[in-house]
Image (tube, rainbow, N blue to C red; front, side, top):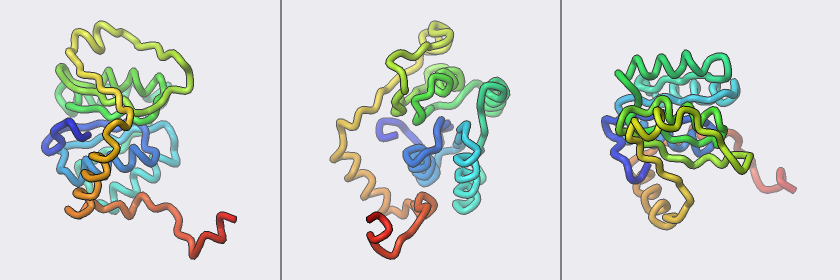
Length: 178
């Protein structure tokens, strides 16, 4: 997110695990015009919906995708955005999600890739049409800016970034881990 203009942008997040949830909270905090949260897991979708309601984030749409739903999700996003989102944050590493990210990014848009695939190779569908002819910018995230990232997060927290929805459990002490 650091290298991209968030305020006023349309953003899709594929994968609503801890990092995807953090990305959604930051996109909301930094006033993205529209945020799509996409996941295959019913549990993740439920968590994302709960966060959306708690954050009063009317500009956030939570969508469940999978083999049968992917085309409908893509079509809806492309239709609602007039051609695709400005930025996709791919957090899952799943081949299907990577390809979905490339399909739903607008012409000249960007895709940030953080999710780690489980296999060595990933097949990119319609590479020419979904990447080259769209003029996409692809950015792989490797954690090389760890200290600047920490500083930026401290700044976001000082500005009021609300992360309460990311806390799933609280314990009285460390005895529960022994």
